[in-house]
Structures are given as structure tokens and as C-alpha cells.
Length: 132
Length: 132
Image (cartoon, rainbow over all chains, first blue to last red; front, side, top):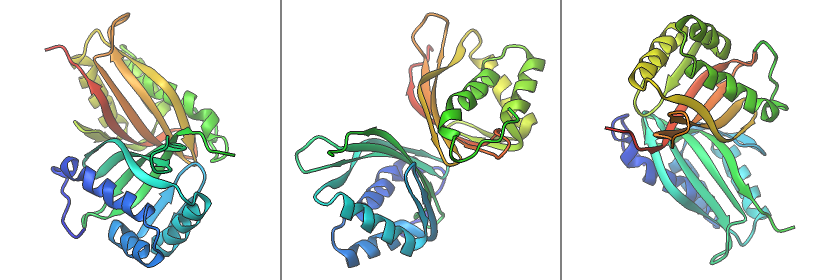
């Protein structure tokens, strides 16, 4: 995660940037998750979606931990293709139990800093079919 | 376009913000297009997509004019649904001749300023099937 991401090859880096992001969301172990968050996000990184917002490694860690607790047993995974240009990457994700249909699908637009880490996330929901 | 867009009702404003944006792209008359650009974008607004970038009313006007010239005879229209939250709106567009299948479809993520005008555009291409 320390590679320099230039505007010209971010399209090629889109998949790995998205994978690092999803790995942090999908990590059940708290200490490992904290390390993945530090690897995926800049220290001042911001996050906003229709339901929540937060910033910084501590804030993102608390937010992701709370979401994981709420959806215990479900996994986050990449969904569809990733693309990118200049300093932005777009990818979609799905939240699902292993082997089951997703209960939510969303698309995130992230800005990538010079060190290859994400400096901001703007998230959108594409589909939501949560069990009551 | 002078209404104040708050975080709480931007979801309801998403369609009209997207419509003003598309109206500027789709206006064939240069003087009217310039006025629509001033109505849709803040004076310092930035634009970036995989193929081009520009900023400010003059820069956006020149860019949109050049794109229109390149794709003369085609129309820009909204495609699918629009959504938004906080100060961001997401919408898709299609470029097509009247009554024909689109030659390009894209998705734009825009940040909306307090005056309801767009302050930045980050564009992505979803499909491209341009005639040679």
C-alpha cells in the first residue's frame, strides 16, 4: 500500500485499491482490521454515505466495527467491475451471507492519495433488501 | 437554481440538479448554453472524467461546446434514476440520436454548493459504443 499511484495507471490499480478497502470491512478480527484500515486509508480519510459519516483511522475503525456488529454473519465482497481515472476509483460491493443473495449492494467513489491510500469515500446504495 | 439545498432534502433535489446539468450539455444555442452553465455550476466548478477535465464557467463552456461539436446531432439525456445524500448527487446520462440507442452512457457524481449549484463533477463511463 505504499506504492505511488499516478493518474496514468490508477485504472490498473482500481481493483487492488478496492480490494484493500473491502478487506478492511470484511476482517472479523479487531486488531487485524485496525491494521487493514491503516493500510487502506490515509490518517485523515473521510467517509460519507446516505446513513453515516466518519473520519480518521479511529473513526473509521469504530464505524466499520459497529456496522459489522449490526450485520454479524454477513460478508462484504466486491461486486462487478472496478474502474478509475485521475485520482478517483469507483467500485461496487455486496453484503451477503456466504452462498446467499446479497442483502445490500452499494457503489463507492473514492479519492486516492499520492501514497495509494484512500483519502475520501462517497458511498451510494444501489439496492437494499435487508431481513427484518 | 438559487434555492438553498440542505443535506436533508438533497435526495429530493437530485432530479432537478441533474436536469439542470443535462440541460446545459444539451443546449445547442451558444448564448443560452452559457446561461445554463452559469445557472448549473458555481463559478469555480471543476469537472473531471476519464477523457477530459476543466474548471470555471469559461472552461466548462469551452469543453461542453467542443464535445457537442464532436458529437453533433446527438442529444444528452438523463438515464435511469438520480439519488443524493449530504451534499452529493449521483445520476447517469445517455448520449444518443433522437429515437436511437445510446452511443455512450455515463455516471456523474456531483458535489452541490449551498446555493444549489454544482461545485464539482466526477464522471465515469459505463458503456461506450461510438460509431467510427
